[in-house]
Length: 364
Ligand code: SAH
Ligand code: SF4
Image (cartoon, rainbow, N blue to C red):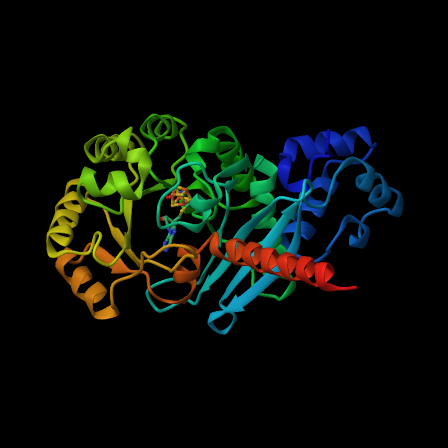
């Protein structure tokens, strides 16, 4: 069995471990503050801990289950995409997004996390869906994405994560227990469930299960269509849980948790961007009393699907009305494109491998 990572154990488990090492409980808080604030980038660097404890920690706990292998910065440094490698070599993405405050809102630092390597749902517009499911992430591998972000922001004096959205690679409700455990772990690190959004392509039984957990998270439903005919094509899971059942589950979620459900709608030219679609979406959102995030589709390799022109997107948003916002700007766009950095890296790597093979074959 691999060693647990700091992000994968609870505060009580950390205290227990320290107790076994003959250490007082307050050491747990010292360690966690370093990790969360980025004031030490490894157990060995925690200068207020005895040297022997630092060595002992190394033998019982890993610093992180994920190693950063690549990162790209965008939007004047407000967005940073991370590619992280697990101990078995599998890679996932996390996106760090800073929202500057305004007179009406406080600054936020949101981490968009992956819940699986790949995804089994296979939505036709999604880069992660094209991969298929490779494996589920463990709870610690999810919280470690947030810790990686916390260290990076913390080390640059920018503060700690305030919000977490499960909108990276994978379908969180298909990795239910690890996702729920990670939400509970994150609560201990200081991200309250109220500041967590779980996005789902529509697993009805798991939506009901989540509603009963007693965790006041927000739920986002990835709707993308207003008729079953179109949604069947975009999100194959719709054949099992059609729109009417999905929206009913959304309403039950709100009734049970008191939290509103929002809708995600990726705009695709000629597929779901007609005036009837806008009208249908307006009606469905009103039924749910929920907000709609419109996301012009990001191009993915090997697919002809594309976003409508910007003025069409704007007109669509206007028809849906005040419940709709278009997530076209900066970080939000990077969030929507989760899964694409990894897909692009894989394509690059395959190209490099092919070139290397050709060169090897042609060399004397
Ligand atoms: N599996 C979950 C959560 C991860 S996907 C879900 O589907 O809800 C997070 C969001 O990214 C979803 O709303 C999804 O529709 C969106 N997305 C996926 N591929 C996209 C693309 N090519 N362009 C824009 N948004 C995309
Ligand atoms: Fe999976 Fe979400 Fe992508 Fe659909 S959109 S394939 S559910 S990650």
